[in-house]
Picture (cartoon, rainbow, N blue to C red):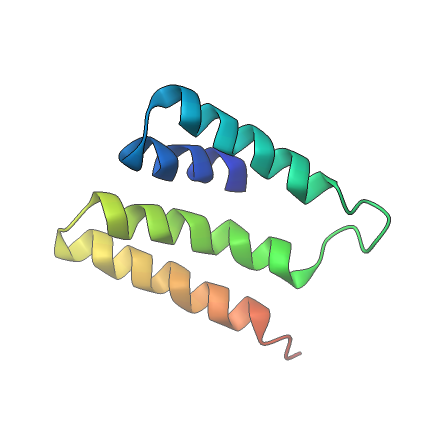
Amino acid sequence: MTSFYTYKIALEFSTKKAAIWCGIFCVFIQSLFGSMQGVMSEHISMFFFMPSLYLILKHKEWYWVLISGILMGATAMVKLNMP
């Protein structure tokens, strides 16, 4: 999911070929540290952060900004690590 939104964000600023490479490198870098914890809170927070960033960059209507804010709030709550 993170790699898909990395591709979509890169597509807004560069060519399709460069955006595909960004998505591929995102998968490679995230899977590089396989010996550590399987799912860290950073991975879960990126699940909410990347769609939020894409929505902020792509859409300017108030309801998309609201959805993006909700996703940013979910990112902050996941990263707080509070039970």
